[in-house]
Image (spheres, one colour):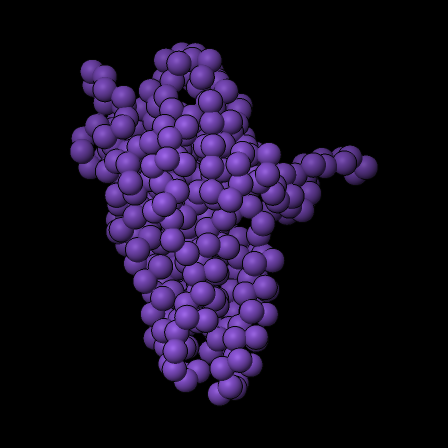
Length: 352
């Protein structure tokens, strides 16, 4: 299976197909989604995950909800559509792409003239446009990221954390989009994939994507990154993002901040790869990014195996915030940009 064949969110006739990422790498399964509440469930349970992919899924969720509304009265339709949007917004708080996509869908509905059935048609077309645009955006991110990677004799060894590949987007990937572009250009020697506790997205998903494509990949535990850098095994770090503040502070999967600190200590460039829709210019810095906390069972259980003693307490934030000062560049579809320049270069380009 090549990278161009991995599409985690797709529209088929009258329904959405989602690759069930909770069952990878052991089983490749597709879930059919025909109702918006089922889409909300899929986002909450991480059947679909990754900020751009969540945005695409939410856009289709708004359309599915619109399709379920049984009225020909425009005002009634728009009121009920806001309830659909409210349910989808409640699914996951950190990834801003979710809110961006929902806002674009509801804004489209309010601005579109004509009967309710026409509004529904336009909403489907808008969701499909968001889907297609994300794939193009990721390919642009991959190419700009390739150009930004450090020059050195020989090929690069890139460390990544969590999964920011085709599975986390509409296709191709953000951080893994940079990896794919480097591989295609003959500049990549190997990917080192942090396993990414507690849900193991690096070990399960990033490694799976690399294996499908024949990209050499070595899975390491999260606490091995510093050791690998100290031994000169890593040339660059590339990660994705779930929300980026206006000053460049970046929320990504828990553990990213640690990797950034270690990379800084070893003078290794640290890149964030994300579409413009991931940048939240409404918040000034990372302290304003809401951090999702997930169920403690993700820590104390793996499958049917209990890891921890009864009576222990648990803290399970899904994300942390990497300060902009630790980031070499943020790679978007508009190029690789220093965090301090985001506001000046990109704020006027973001459209909802």
